[in-house]
Length: 139
Image (cartoon, rainbow, N blue to C red; front, side, top):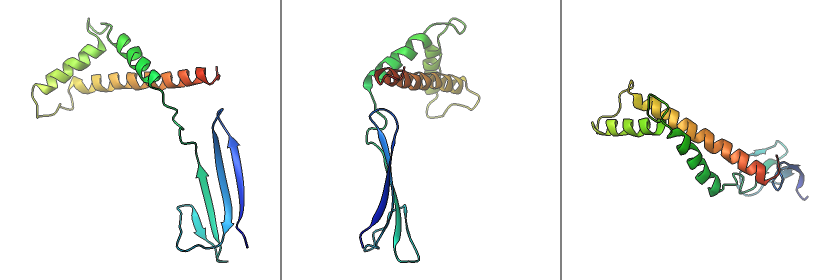
């Protein structure tokens, strides 16, 4: 008896799809997938999912504009006459001056590191959303 399977395709974003296949198949010679289970009848229940290979849809333009879009405003001297980027790099130099001892937990380095990188990653994330949303006509 041939294998019986049901396949469902779910349309998502434009140009991408998610397919989901569920079925019953005869036991094969020691072939086991993470989504398979042997049933009492001797048949095997399998479940497979596949995603598009380019699910991230990376674009180097977003990375370039995102870096410039974060470094430019974070370089404006607004924190006691110093910029966030300047304070971050200054704290790196201070911590490297007593290398190989790492920065203390109370060091200002951690504040500047987390703040600078959080801003960078938010800029890159929103840049990716905005750029891809515009190129794929979401808005």
